[in-house]
Amino acid sequence: MIDEALESGARLSVACEALGIHPRTYRRWRTDPLDHRKGSRKTNNKALSEQERDRIVEVCCSPEFQDITPAEIVARLAEQGTYIASVRTFYRVLKAYGKLHHRGNGRPPRKPYTPPQLKATGPDQVYSWDITWIPSTVRGLFWYAYVVVDVWSREIVGWSIHSEESEGHARALFERIRLRRNLKGTWLHADNGNPMKGATFAVWLATLGMFLSHSRPLVKNDNPYIESFFKTLKYHASYPGHFETIEEARQWLGEFIDWYNTVHRHSGIGYVTPQQRRTGQSAELFRLRNETLLRAWDEHPERFPRQGPRLWKERRVVYLNPTAETRRLILKDVA
Image 1 (tube, rainbow, N blue to C red):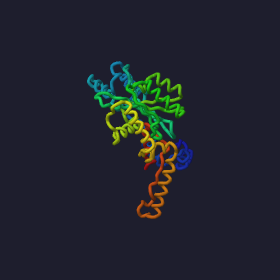
Image 2: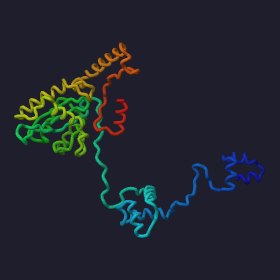
Image 3: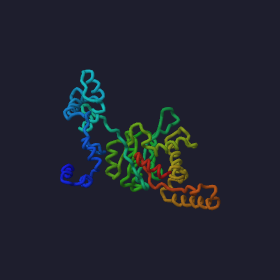
Image 4: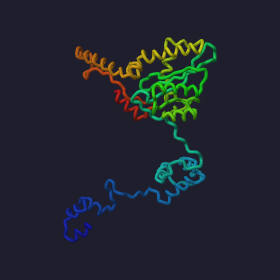
């Protein structure tokens, strides 16, 4: 088109401007017809033909090679005196054809189970519960303590001690909690014990409008709040270690939980008691602390950072089993 324009008497700069190219580009194309501009379509002498790409897919999906990796396929073909392409090219072609997945008849790998992220913005939204052993003075004899904690306030909302693990005991415990708290839409998180995973127990909770979630097998970090309570329980200075009777164990645990809910200052909720957190008194306590810090800053600013003291801030949202993205947001907010 430029040549025709030049033959008709047009100037080179005007003709090139009309087509959106530079005159130097036109002169270069006169000697080298390949388009070397960035983003232009180029021919690659090393590229496989369409028939060779189809052959790679056919070989990988054949009964002989459908259950092995491309690296092993290339190695076996080389032993047979055949070379089609490199291992990386095999992967690239399989991905382009949508075949980069399980190709054989064997069972494909299963995605590992991850417990759901549970979010609590107030009391009675997410509960965590478990059963722990309470040893007696008789070697090998234990009782079982059923304990339920509110994830948001860290309050122990229900407990009982029995001589055996039973779904019936768990149902009776949650029936008492439900009547006291008028629960609806509450999530209950537990591990994989028999009382927790009973089918009739799950159906019964569903009829009450409550939901179940479970930890991964052998992963204690999936149920951290109740495990933290059990450690506080058994490492406390008043814990006797062994009990003479089940009535003695019940009396001691009841007194300890009363202390835990009303006296113990919990670090995870800003050193307030679970009861203060649940009733809303914690907001007033945080306000008083911040007033004291700001007054001290006014009196002695040289003893604080330039931006002032770090004020107390209450965490109004608590997550159980947060995702990686949620953990990053939490760490950013704390920093």
